[in-house]
Image (tube, rainbow, N blue to C red):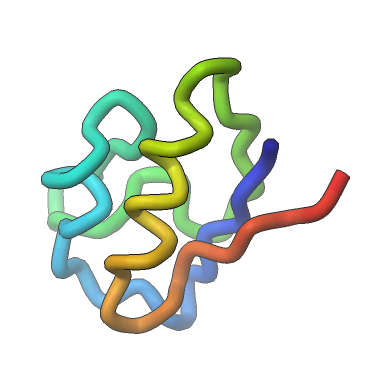
Length: 66
C-alpha cells in the first residue's frame, strides 16, 4: 500500500501523526514530514495508515493504487 501526501492540502493539524505515529511523521512546523511525496506503507500498518487517511480534515492523505 502507498499513500500520497498532498502538500497543497496539508495544513498542519497533525491528526495523522496523533492517530498513527507508526506511519506518519511531522516536520518542525507540524506539517506532515512527507508532504509532496508518495510513501510506501510497511506491511501490517495498512489499517493505521487508513486511520490517517479517514481522519485528515483536508483529505491531504490519498491512497494510491498499486
